[in-house]
Image 1 (cartoon, rainbow, N blue to C red):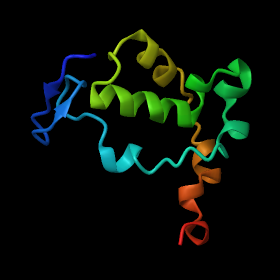
Image 2: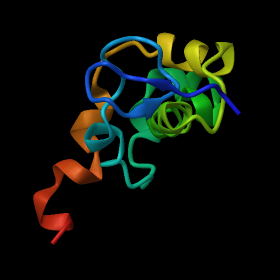
Image 3: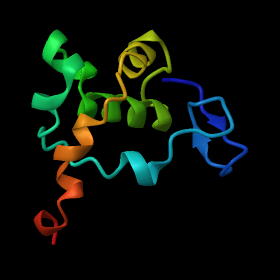
Length: 100
């Protein structure tokens, strides 16, 4: 298990050792529906779930909770994201009518 550090930003336990760790209200919105998979260029190229938007969200959440170490297995998928934001256009949470 990763060592838990305390964020000076929110005074909460996290595995991220910098002042502004990922916020739970952001990564907890993912419902893992999978709509993002077919539009993600890195997932299409690799077919590796860790290199999909929902895979990255899962890795970030697990690292933030201290369940997995913040190491290359987390950093590589996150850093290979192209920031194209194609996933946002198909994200279920963006469809207000779908979540009632």
